[in-house]
Image 1 (tube, helix red, strand yellow):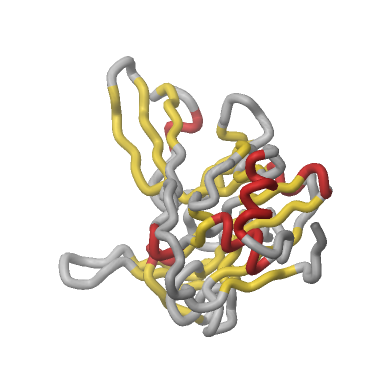
Image 2 (spheres, rainbow, N blue to C red):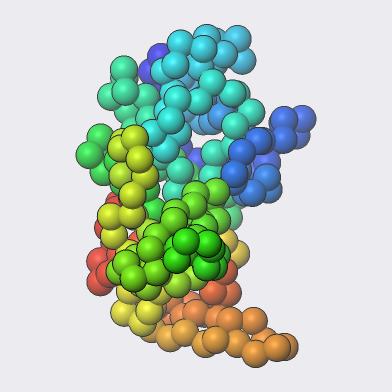
Length: 229
């Protein structure tokens, strides 16, 4: 296996590609086989990819994945420990590409950032927190983590057996943010204004001099990015 580039781009969705499985949105992710074979060039064909996967050499967010159709999407961390190679999936600023694999360090690859998309009270004085890429957490109502709101970002260690929230990045003015979708995808800056929206107007957020849908904004740091983009 070998590597060629620090950042590898995903172009337009290839034809005849299997529909990816997993928590990421189908139209915003790519099958693991495609990522390993066609982007990273770690294998020449699907048979070689399957061998790599069977041997347990591929980790996604700290878990061994052996399914070649598992979908890889934004903020996923892809690790190849035997090769000492680690990547984070980020949006591309290039129009012809949807996503990039940004090579990162082993230490930084331990941190997962996930946008909070749901919050509701459940039995036992608990609050259920869910993220857009399939993670969920149960926190006590009197815990500081209960202050998490939708659009905030939770940070946790994917190398730990039990996923525990280490940090909350609040969705607020002054926070460092990344635009994940739309024509301005891949651009980052500080949030300067948040408009809640109305029944007829969707919520909008201004990142630097760019106004975009709040759904497209991911907080990645307090004043500065917590990770390399």
